[in-house]
Length: 385
Image (cartoon, rainbow, N blue to C red):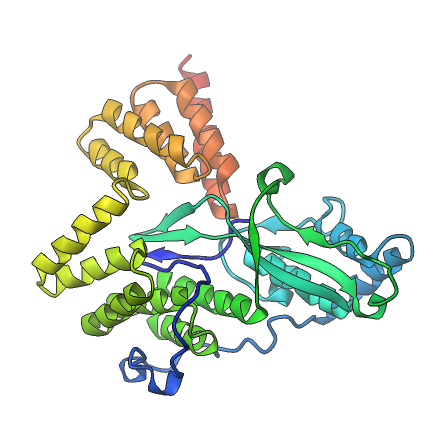
């Protein structure tokens, strides 16, 4: 249920108190003249809409169960029991409600949106929650993504208000029960959820180098929720990848005005200043960043990759092990630790790490890739006992 995309170069998905919103029409950080028309419409009007297949599922699998159990429990059972819909968690794309249902998969934001769509159709009150979970990071190419966490609480049906029925609040979360026990949450608005969706779509388009689409989604996220700094940070990264250094600098500087210790914006701004030839200003920021976060995400991993290139597999193994120790949820750390052990002839440990990489993968493609590599290692072991 690790959810939204946050980049470094990137965005941090977190709602926070900010100065009054700046109207989009006069926002000096918006530069429509730099981008062309998006290839796809930027539209969230059907984000929570049910399609015909969802309505059929609602009638056949959910509504009839509500005669014997609370409708909230009927919804949860129908959507998330293994013998029912059999949803698969997949971080590959952020989907609207109908897309997530048709694919039977999605990241946690997609699954929350789908759950909300069904709950609304049943007349169940919903509350979206942002959770204070352990910070998690992933990467795609030279982009780092910070993942946040959301879940959804199902309240009473509108028709039950005042009757005393269905007084419980039913929380739907896709983490294990042990992981969410004691987790602090705070309520967020549906506008924030929509902004998160658009922010994810912007980041996903950027990964595919569809920068006109990425800009359109980020711009709409800013328009929809001007106090959501994640969208501005994403916008800055889009400018940076588009080669628009001064607009990027202005965006990151604006984020730091709101959040002076935002390390993502700080790192991004330093990168812009370096490209602008302002090395002294960049060095000041990097010094401050090192004081705040001396061992940033992927620090040991990048050093480990350097050691692998030099053929120093023992040192690489130790560096990858440090990343695993502080972020054992991330599949790529296990994979490279397995590769280093393989290079050192430690076949059992290589197999174990590849199995962990497969277990922790968050997309079907990654899972299948690691499964193939693990099968190859095991067949090699059998051929050379």
